[in-house]
Amino acid sequence: MNRKLLEYVYKKYGRELYIYLYSLCKEQTLAEELVQETFAKAILSLSDEHPNFRAWLYKVGKNLYQNYRKKWGREEQYQEMPEIPYEAGILERYIQNEENQRLYQEILKLQEDQKQVIILFYFSECSIRETAEIMGLKEGHVRMLLTRGRRKLKERLEEES
Image 1 (cartoon, rainbow, N blue to C red):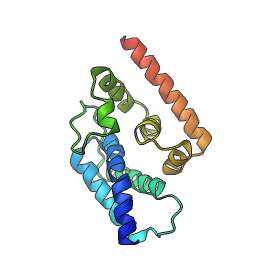
Image 2 (tube, helix red, strand yellow; image 1 turned 90 degrees about the vertical axis):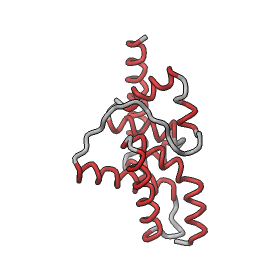
Image 3 (spheres, rainbow, N blue to C red; image 1 turned 135 degrees about the vertical axis):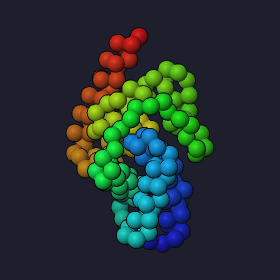
Image 4 (cartoon, helix red, strand yellow; image 1 turned 180 degrees about the vertical axis):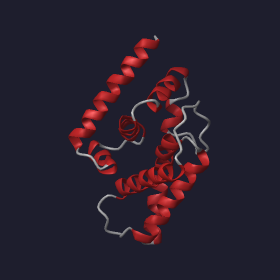
């Protein structure tokens, strides 16, 4: 992969990939390592002509995280959202107030596939098509997961009100 192209892709997608991976693992150091490993794989194997860098990067990052969980048998822990070290972005701005923090905590409690779809669609601003490609699903399945995830969030938030 061309160095200038890699730098461009890193500047454009590195931060949002970090937020996505951090949302999955909830560990700053692990998320940073997964981002680095994802870009290392890009250097080694991604051609300059790949049709969708962003989707490929997310998919590789997600697979690396899943491999990590399989290898180490780590269970997800739901914890308060610590400060994310990157400059304030969409996720940080979104969860600054208490109500949005509660919403984010409920997102983390969703089924894994619903959680990933919601994070990719709303926080990473991926399209339905990109989300489907990243997750290896059909677009209709992504729409269904998004609808069910939103419905579940609404139910949980209404219960607590």
